[in-house]
Length: 115
Length: 117
Image (cartoon, rainbow over all chains, first blue to last red; front, side, top):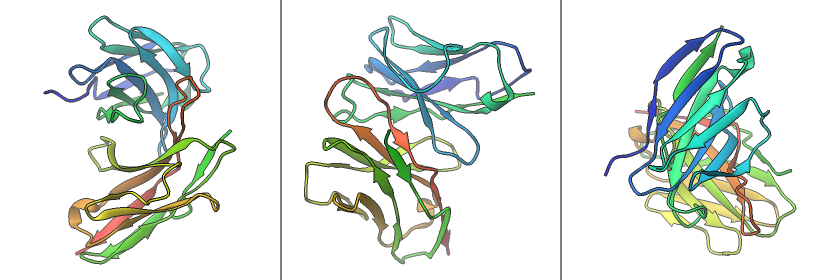
């Protein structure tokens, strides 16, 4: 059983560019959540996808968007990058929306630096 | 909106000793869940322990236990017999319980735990 994987590990972009981050869920998991973790802070919830549909969103602007594919892998897209978007981006997968009963497994994250 | 506060940016403990990490939270909900996550230098968040608010009994997982004080909105983590592998950032997190929607977890800012050999 493979765990949650994310790619790339590190990424450097310039302000105004667009970026796509990828996440492969743990085998059999149909729910994925994305979090942004700024340096020295706890993660902040961006959004969650369940069976290819967004079913929850945190306080992030529309330039943060996502996709979930039929194989339950996921993408996080950020348009018009700003310096404050520099952070570690974590994805987490679980089986079913109710991850309170089904443990949520996190990936190792993608470190995004915006110059 | 709910908030989670970890007032100890850093804690240090001798190997084999016991350490307690503090967490307080603020919510108007009665149904919620609380979690402690560990984030080692590898960056991968690992669930340490979780507590359902409706359960009065404190959760325990091997060397890890919590002291859940619902009225005081306090949720501390006790690590007994500290080991070098326990060194990491520890995050307290909250999630609203049943009621629909996927709110995600609300995390505190974390406590950096140092284990002295």
